[in-house]
Image (tube, rainbow, N blue to C red; front, side, top):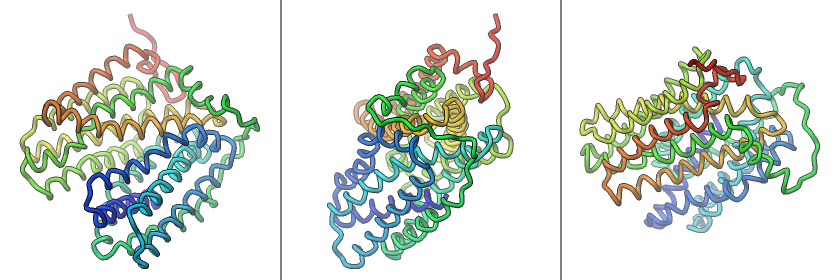
Length: 391
């Protein structure tokens, strides 16, 4: 959680500092693009590295580099030499670090906890991530109001401590890393594995298309200003509501993990997500909107925990880095393109119709995937056991 909170703080500070320097919305957008490009360019490489190198070392090195970048931003702010170009380079390097760190961290978890409690571990990890999404931007905003240097200094110290703690992680000795030559084929094996395993393909692609269509949160500023007429305070509440719903649900799942019918629960959660999105889309009352956003966050976490658990347990350890790299690319792409899709649709057909179409689209995708991937629908346990066909 320390790492995620620090990264959220850094992202907020970099964005705000860029806008303070340029007062240009396009330059602000470039910050997000600079962090996203490395994920696309490095997907095949990071997966191969995560399957060949001690994943703790990858996380350690990435966090040390992130701490160094935070330190350089601190010095640059103090020496007053930060410019648009320096900030974009920093954002690109941070994006590259996250591209390596994400798959390595995800693939590391099954090496640390037994399979029997992996779902709970993922729930706790999700809970920590949601807490970071709440704390990071708000803490970063408070510190930035005092001075950008405070954000960079706090982030640098936290990332440095987090990197050191990585070496105290004890791994399960039963995992033996295979030695294989680095070739284009070995780098593509992650994509090949996903394609050949319907449960993994269905799980990862479901996330891509469901999030791509259901990205109504990108329209929150429009709802706050033009539809609900709440202004900045309403926008703040609406930004927080999904994260609070996600946090509470992840804690519930950590204490009371799901036992069976994973496939049915996964698709049910997506349908609830779509319905809540439609409710939010048509709401003109801030209370109803907050309830809908809370449900969106809670139902999304149910889906995230099941999908993450399935990907980890259905993938052999020597392939987890490459498969998690593909998964990270799909997640990153869906988040980025989801915001673009929502904004484009809102410009073409209007804000409310765009959000309604997005919610209904998620429901349609859930129904279509139940038909296209029956093995995913029927899965009963994380080990891959399926429910018996009736009739």
